[in-house]
Length: 442
Image (cartoon, rainbow, N blue to C red; front, side, top):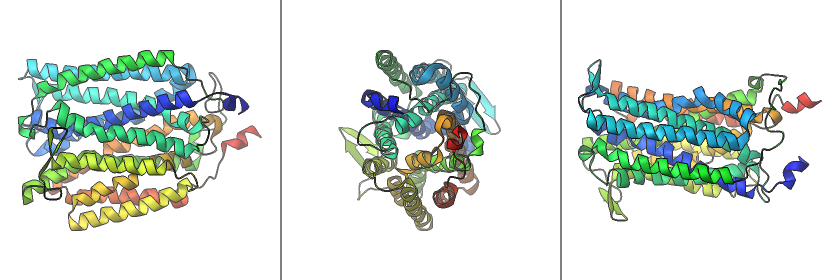
């Protein structure tokens, strides 16, 4: 522990906060491609459009349970810095596959696959592969980022504050991403006017940016933190699953990420449905909004406002050093569940936008509670924790299937309400520590 206090972690802390921005930006950008790609790729999907379009989010978050263990193994073998560099190279490959999906569709427009009544371009499935690969990269990054931010000693901060600061950076990325997709990638065009060819240049630019980040990381110092990971060849005395507060924390994060992504990725589809049923969807009487010379339809803006609410909440949360994580999680889940219920019964998407304010601190609170007193099991627990992130794949997909079956998005938000109630249970009961890794050292 004394060794940790002698190391200056300010530089590594800033580096990982920036990488949290990258993770948030790409996660939300990937989700925001659902609406545009529904028009560009899925014109022949018929009644299965909602199901197929949510596969974009599903493929991304499927990477979390499948590659979280890879991240833990890499941390043990290569250390934190080596693992981060490798994860960025994985991301570069995924971004290149995104580019390939667009290039292939442009040059081979007749290449398609028929599934049930849907005729889907092969390029769409290439895009899904890219989504999985970039999601794998984001998974491995977070196996490093979460425990490192929690454990690195920066003067004047507590673990949940450092995670909240990282979360704020993540939220800046998620807030910017919808503008990037709607305004820059697609130039503010209406959904019907979007062309697949517009995907190519932005993805090549992102490849260049990630290569630059790799070069910077090679030159930066990112020291390992003693006591947060097993050594190579070390045999641990117990299974990480024996810690009930971690096991239930994985389930809690399953629901947290699931409901967060349900709203962030699907609220624009819900708003578009309302617009089609009831006419132009407005924001204080406006049916569109011009920002920096770019015109945005209000449904596209709603996701930005949702992620923006998360940013505001995390900025506030970074100053709440005297309020326990359990208390923060209890209060925010109660308020989020209440807003979700009112939104469903009043059929009002705007109340779901407001939920972002309360989702803001949940990740940091759940991670802090789930990894408390785990010692050398912490890095492995971080990999296990990523398994729960698959909720971001499963719940939005179930919501899309539910929407197709019901013919409406309205009652699908009951999935979100159930998730909020489970997190409330975890805050009050499930996060209590019954087993501590400290006993292994006695």
